[in-house]
Image 1 (cartoon, rainbow, N blue to C red):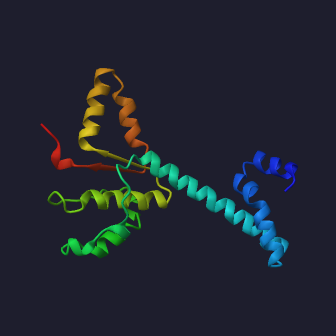
Image 2: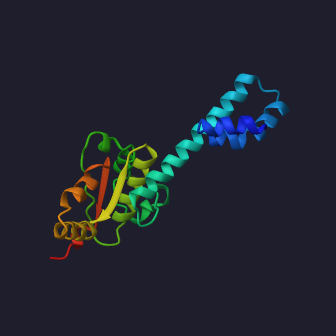
Image 3: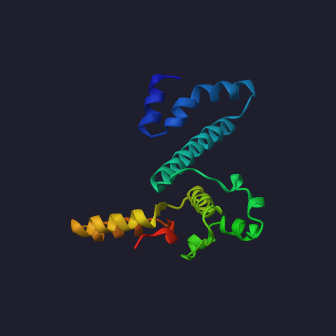
Length: 173
């Protein structure tokens, strides 16, 4: 690719197009794609790259302690769990409706796994998510009270579309 075109694509913040232009051009020549097919492929690649970067950014800013997915969850381990309900929750309609979801159960039953997995589904759907434990939130608020920044901490937890509070039952007195 000419360095002039590369420079222009990068100035337009089309980094994926700039990095994939040569290979996509060769592929289009090989398969005799039309100009429109070639351009569509370049734009699709750019959009996919941006979507992936956005997802990775949302997942990173969510502060998940680990990455867990619904696909990894062993529903056979929890036979009483309503699989249909969990899959309905994965649509994230509850986030759009500003509804709460509370997962209740004994330790080791998969509540954290499911809450992280639902949080990741929300990230995939473009929602901003914040994961924390109740203990971490309480500690942040205590510290914020000491330096008079409580409003800032509260605002930090009001900004995301979804806040996942884990370990509610383990809050020390």
